[in-house]
Amino acid sequence: MTENIHPMIRKSCSRKLVAVLIGIVIALAGVCSIIYSGILSNTLQEEKIAFSEIYQTENYNYGGYVYVDITEEPLEIGHYDDDEQYYYITNGNDIYIMICSKSKYDEISSAIKANGTYNLVGSIAHLSNEVIATAMEIFNDDDTSSDPAAIREKFTAYFADIAISANKSATNVELLIILGIFLLVFAIIIILAAGLEYLSYRRTLKKMSDAESEMVYSEMESPQTVFIKKCNTYLTPRYIVSLGNKLEIHKYTDILWAYRFDQSHSFVPVLTNIKAMTSDMKTVSIADMQGLTAGKTQIINQILEQLQAHNPQVAIGYTSEYINHFKALRKSQRN
Image (cartoon, rainbow, N blue to C red; front, top):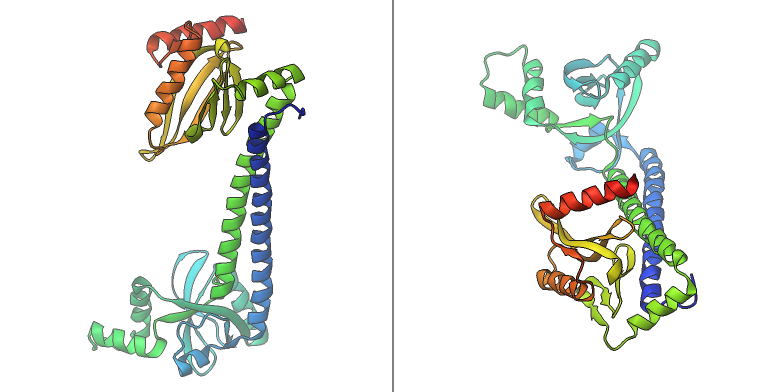
């Protein structure tokens, strides 16, 4: 980067680098959250309590780990898929409901056959009405005289509509994992977006000679220059200098075609700018603004009018005539 870069360009470039550094910090926070979730999980497993204690204390929203020493092969209630299956289990005294995967069931079954017992560690999960209805059919298999409401009341009184889940981590552990993943995804988005923008600024500045840098510096300091804050764009006597997602510095006379561009997501405007085709047949984005920026139409019109005033030959607007003309022009230049 030359020493003749205008302070506002340098500041805008530095902001991109700061955003990358912030993204790295957020990523480190995400990694720390996931690492700590593992440490917390180990600690909570060491402090696990018997599932029977949950019923004794009626602490059905306990967020730590619980265990059951299973002494008989689980009895299947039903399943959604190989990862979510429901079973009745017993520790020899009481009956509980277990949620686990097929592979975990196979592990439990093999251990009971070999050792006579299996220490299952999991966390509390609340059962859906659909699962309860299926479980009640087996629970009340020997009694067909009771009405459904009485059966449900009896079922809830015994099981409290909860199960021990081998698929679910302790509540705080889950929250830390979710937080860590969210932070990592958010950080990756920031690092990629800001990183690409920073590299774009650096590439643009690297291509500029000292003489060009001095010229742009002088133009941006000119009393005739108009600065439009909402899109961070300078309209100098001879240049458009756009300090948006990418650094774009172009002479008015180098722009062949310009038109308004709007981008929406789910019918909500997210971005408005000007697309401009330059003399080297590249399309660049100028005057980036958020989709809901107030007065953006007036700003776009102001820039296009200024562009046309300095370059009467420029094509303004997105019409089929201009689309076909510049498509053919670009094709001829490639050939």
